[in-house]
Image (cartoon, rainbow, N blue to C red; front, side):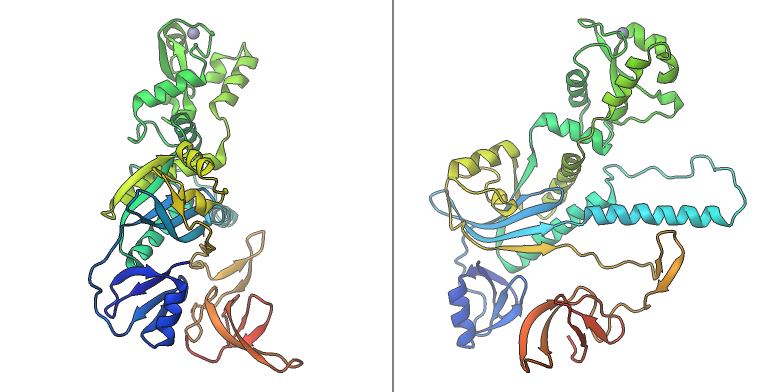
Length: 416
Ligand SMILES: [Zn+2]
């Protein structure tokens, strides 16, 4: 794995090999600047006489794990892999936390209060391009690592995988609830998609070969949404006959068709769904970094990977994103980065029923340490009397002791 190098003033230089980094540190020509990822800072030189090669960050955004690769572009058009990373997202935890918070709030509001009639339309409209917090976090954590790599290495370009293929893009948009008027999905794409989905015939009378209209299954007049999952195709007579009536009423004499339509409207493709609305958003965010952004498709990634005989991992998938001719040095260890969040504001621990069970401390840091910190600890046990150094992840830093990943409980003495 390449070691990131900064000059005396903290400006990024070309990453070097582990061997060279070791020599620099041994000869006291560099200091350790950061441990994860490993960055050293030169002590004796100002900015190196600009021999920068082109570095590129490659991304394979996934719903659970995003692969990140830092590569050097070579003269012959090939790329050499410098570092591999896997970023583990916590979208699931975020959505679970929000769901449980909502349930608690419901209970709290409903438990002790008299009945109040719901107020009408008291929620503001969501901003254009809004995506759920669990998905937005994927964009933010990915961007944060892109920024980090930019600080540690002179990166000049980006590649990211955008779509699997266009058909899927539409399907995913439907399930994740992106509305077809939200810009990123043009009207004609929705229409092409609907034609495919409903088999190019009227959903209500199976007539084909006639002009078909986009139809809201749950009528707009009754509060039906513009989501793709609420759209069907119907011929003009059926559309007119249905009017703004509820679909259940309209099809009450044909319950088989009704249930078929309702089921078809929402086809579950959950995992892939998260990827796509996020990927579009990520692309827009990445463009704002000012780097040149290349986009690729999943098909091309797979093609590159099988052509070059590279195994399938998230990080190596990232290497294969976009236009790639030759890849060298890809047999590298992968640094796994886990998104841990910053804890929660809630200071009351609740039981499953939402009753208070205990309270957390107001302050999150104890002597500069905090839950989830990586520490270098001197652990001494009674029987084998020895001490050793290792990186540990602290379990909890409440009070003055901490549980470490290995199950040891220790006192906190030093400052971080
Ligand atoms: Zn019809």
